[in-house]
Image (cartoon, rainbow, N blue to C red; front, side, top):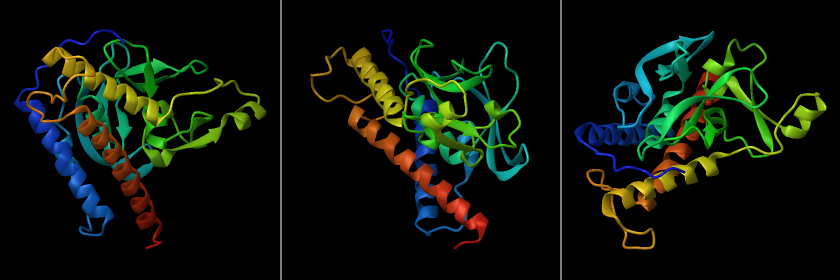
Length: 249
């Protein structure tokens, strides 16, 4: 991992964190039955941290034949021009992953012709495929799109994706890596970026006193907890939304 330079967390970054926190509170209230409506995605559309590579975004109700609250956004890239589609409840996780200097890139899978959205730092490697983070794919499994998905490398909504064991993939005669990354690895990478930011700002070793990032009032421990809470809430919103759509509540 290359050395981090100190990021200036100005008022826009403070506002972005506040927008994420408010969304997460509304999402938790939705899961707990304290509100009937899904959390409002509008506040996320302009929320960005300084190194974000997510361009302008919009909230839509349907994309690629799937009716569901969706955020349509572009990722900075010199070639790809099309929008990608995200669940708002996982989009907030994406924003938080960018907080310590992370960014989203388009990376080609080793055995695929398509470029998939991946989470990275200042350099391209290492990176972590967003699909695996969203679906919580184990290291011994691959993430696949539904049979009728069109251009799945553009669609990152969880309802359009699923995971399958690598053994099953090999049985079908398709290539796959021996093992792949998982959520834990992506979160650890993000926390490492955060700790490098603390060092860049305070000039301390990781073994030194607990430090917070200027302006954001977060320690590395706070940030790690926030990421896991955001992922837990995103999973909860996804499951409840599916149940309500199926009429099983």
